[in-house]
Image (cartoon, rainbow, N blue to C red; front, side):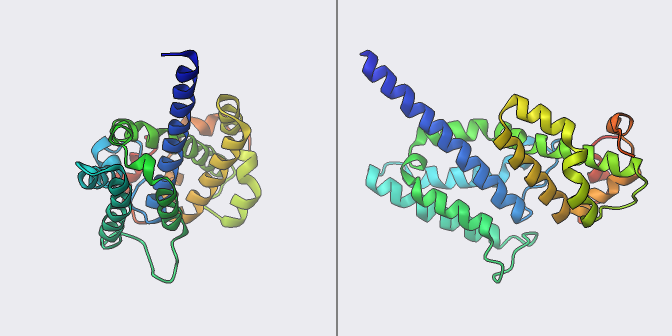
Length: 238
């Protein structure tokens, strides 16, 4: 293989990896918006991966034995079957009046990248790496939420208050924000912090139980539901 071919293949793989990252982010955000992905890092991998794997398996089942042109068309059909299925789930938080922007963003992305999604090698790689990808998305956001909740308890707050979140979240999560910015980049750290803040407000009842239990972050802080107690303990073990 010539150097030019090798460089071309390397560039192509970099692009595919970037597209896989984009797909995973769109998929996670859609499932979080529908409340079909609980941000519990201690949940079984099979439960965390359940709906992502269903989508990938549906796509693969429909593209087997098809020409390239036929396979790209089947990606859209597989998505529609999957979307219809998850929207019928009883626990899906969805209203037809809401437009569900995160789900529409996922649909738009898949439509624009159907060639990448029609490649069984990419589907295999996504399936094998999905748990790690979800973990890497959720973890930095959850540790920021934990850091903020620890600060709230140290300041005597008994519940999550939206005005306090708007005022104090960025300041109270600075330690984990800086760690993430150093590890990746400022843009990703800003996005993770905004996501964490939105997740906290959307599921304030879900996270409020943690106010009753201290964590290691309480000692470190310098600033003075649809889930039961047992499930909440799985997020941040006391």
